[in-house]
Image (cartoon, rainbow, N blue to C red; front, side, top):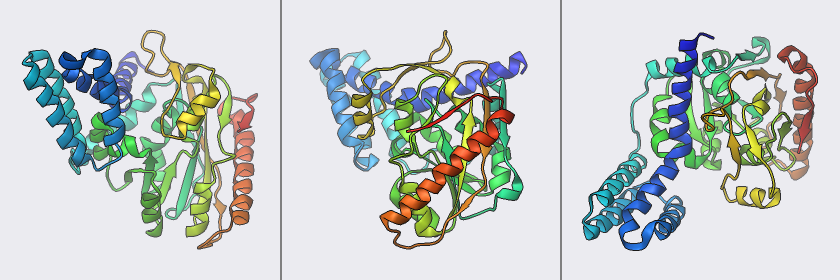
Length: 359
């Protein structure tokens, strides 16, 4: 990769990281700052977190009304420019979630992302045989989540080759990130196009898409895999993750295992308190301390080789009301198919000694 290409990729990952990861902390600090003249920084932050925890459960038009009222009300009472500045930032960010669409589809931005997300890495490739893929009525289950799903971003969601391979497909992410992601909203809205779009992972959304026969792509392991992440270890959280299999049975979908080699080398983490962190994960709270670049920890390590392999589909029968036994049977078949894909592909991907742990 040229130096120019890498720095453009760095800038892209930097803006994405701020949008996806840092925007909520910025909102909390801004809201807490508007309250600070009355209750101090500590209690201002506590109140901001409490407000966010409550408001995130409701229609964001409510938050878009409540946050400016509280923030500017506090600022008027304080009569200080700092409080007004914090109130303005908090209100502007919350307003992004109060509108249906922040921006129109932007093919130029999409092409830039597809080119330069891959340009960040030493190697970024997609291995797939067109003969094993049919368009429509397919679910692509991607592993592992990693810390920030770097391989999924570079080789799947923002990959023109993947778009051309699978056709129209909807990429599913956590509902808070998709619908309430503040600065990430422009990235989500600009992504829309003939290739598909970004949607949330709610049951209602998935059923709606699958009833229409749309292909979907998601990461079943979600936050749990991020919590279980260890540098250099290929781990997937699948034992208790069966909902995606049940939906495929209900709609008669093809189910493709997809695995990214090298994801386990994108970040380093601090372990410990695993049970507590997994319990918090069940409430939708990601709990992982990580760092990538030594001089900019938010971004993934430089020089990683990310190879994403798409396996042949399992052809699931259509069972409108699958039993627990049906789900268990096809879930076991899926785990076997994923392990076979891993073992069959690891040498070609450049990781001949890798071992997959299914947790």
